Length: 462
Ligand code: C2O
Ligand code: CU
Image (cartoon, rainbow, N blue to C red):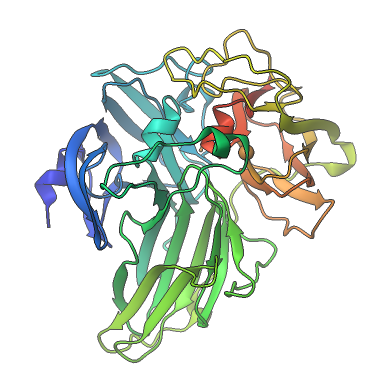
């Protein structure tokens, strides 16, 4: 185990660090440190060696950070990059000042500076973290880590496996290709050509035979919507975007895959076979020869567990919106009316404006001199009608608040809590929530090249 190498990047006084599935985990109780660094490295994505890739990483994803529900966390983030940065804790309902959005909640963090993020996560579940300044470049290089908030009571799995799904764009020479293309930014987004799970191509993980596993799939790429297909097995989807499912989601197959967009997460409970050497494959159901994302292989003698031994995950303390008295607001996602190049302060612009919310293109990271797309009263219930006026998919993410989809003009949507909703072509989705967290909350498409070319804004709760 390459302990010292990883510890240069992540370390803490009080961590119980562990190495599962090629990924470092750190338990952040008390004070923890997290540092982003830039270094030259040559490491392999599976069989394809990538020489001279300027990676902001060290051959593995950023560490999985584990927090405890309801317990204060302090994460001292040091920016070791040449560029400015900040960290956003995707899906966590936290105080606005800790949300990591440059100019809106804090100033960009310069090279060598440290910013202390401290908050108490109210909800258990699967979340993630990523920069919110120079977002395109830094996320394309792989600065996207998982954030797990452990439930107060141990749910009783034999193995908890975080699976960070991200596609990289790598050229023949092993270098990263351009992070985005103007063509992609103006349409569906620029996809990577190398699908990785925990920065490995088609990894196989050894898992205990006859055991109960919790798999946490998190899509942290900059554009791609995955179509997950699971093997036939004894299992169920237990959580969606961090929260225990309230409406069941069907077990996806190659024929009927589950769409999981950039920013979204799905937690799966699975009981693996009793015999040693059994293999279970998970796919991205795309094209004639769908790529395998991850394979599980059983080892050891059977643990003889049973799915029925699992209690349902405890519900998180999210307030139920009062639909009878909720106020309706409509927001339109579509093309930008002009091509003014936005001023992004120190956080980088892509040089184009293609998108808008309510016809106003937003800069994406900086929001100086711009008002909110919606001004909401603290404690009131709202329905936001999200209208996609484009033929492209948009995973729309709201910071700081958790909402529920209640209606679509195209399909029946399971009414599960979320922070990121995937809008299909020309789809109109109503979402409902209680505006119970005060502050200015970023609201944007999670296809980063859409976000950075106009499809962004913020909601004010006061
Ligand atoms: Cu995961 Cu504003 O982002
Ligand atoms: Cu979009």
